[in-house]
Amino acid sequence: MDPQAPPPPRPDPATRPEPAEGIGSPPRRISRRASLLGSLVALLAVLGIAWLAWSLTHREPAAAGPGGANAARGAPPTTVGVATAERADLPVTLEALGTVVPQATARVRPQVSGVLQQVLYREGQMVRKGELLAVIDPRPFEMALQQATGQRMRDEAQLQAARVTLQRYQTLLAQDSIARQEVDTQAALVKQLEAAVVVDRANEGTARLNLGYARINAPISGRVGLRTVDVGNVVGTSDANGVAVITQMTPIDVEFAVPQDQVPALQANAGRPLPVRALDRTRANVLDTGVFASFDNQIDTQTGTVRAKARFTNPQGQLFPNQFVNVQLQLRIVEGATVVPVAAVRNGANGDYVFLLNPDRTVSIRQVKRGLMTVDKVQITQGLQPGDRVVTEGADRLREGARVMLPGDAPRQPGAAGAGQGAQSRRPGASAPAP
Image (tube, rainbow, N blue to C red; front, side, top):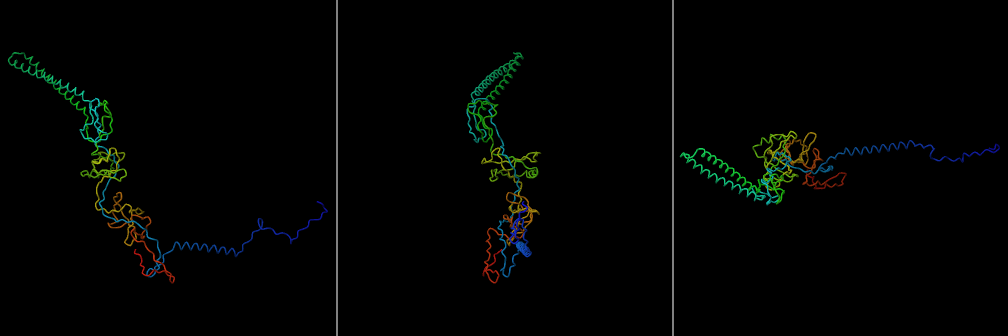
């Protein structure tokens, strides 16, 4: 720097620029009056919100004035469904899953070997006991029968001749004209021929029986299954499939399991026919009705049940072997029981209860004790009398003393409001709705 240079001029304070507001500038202070005014507004807002919440939660209906002119509008009554408790005979039933089993199943096998000549049944046909099912070629058995018959006739002729000779020898022996040894020998020959005739008759009977076995008849009545052999096949006694399988359809049995706790009840009713119903898988249709037949003599230790059997006539053939059905066994009938629909009984902290409909269309909680129960009815042993009306639908929205409306009741019509001296009044002639 040049030491002789003049110093720079100083800025004039009057013309010095003021610093701009922004970063680095000191904030303006809010006045005390503005702060107090903001706090007051916030306090008033909080008080207003608190008053509004209190008024909404503690609102009470206005007291009714003379003639009900100032009655407040309450919540509309709940529409519910009701049912009447009534007396009925309640059947005590035992339900179980059963299996249809035939009383008899016969696999018809031929008793003799031979060529199958005729098949006289159709698959699925109902046959009767003794009806002809098939025929085996009978010619070999006819020949065997003729041979056995000829042998018998020959031995019978020899026996007759030996008897005549023995009679002559006995006459000569009485005259002392023949030795006793010859008489004894002839007598032994007669006995030998008699034994031969017995054997011949047995052989003839066997041949005749084999000839009868050539005609295969149904041993039981029932339904024939699918055919397992055809004409021309050689069949015999060792065939595993046999000629046909017959299953007895009427009557037919149903086996089911009974809990061991119900065994005394079955023993007590052993002398009476207990009715049994067989229902389909959906429990909607009754397939047949029958009677309880018997139960097993021991309890299954793994399941704690005992096998039981019911018998059905099955006239329509709706019960089929190995079919699964639902069984309903009626043990007894409770006469004159007080019953209500199952939907009417509810469960709470103090036990079972119902909503009882009062005459003024209000409901009250009634504690009850339930007994036996069916699919749609339940017995009330304590707490209700026949004729009491209970709520069955819409009970979820009810409380003690709640007002309800039945589906057949007319809806409430609120009165028209009119302005006059700051009070609400009904129109002339309008009447309050009946409870």
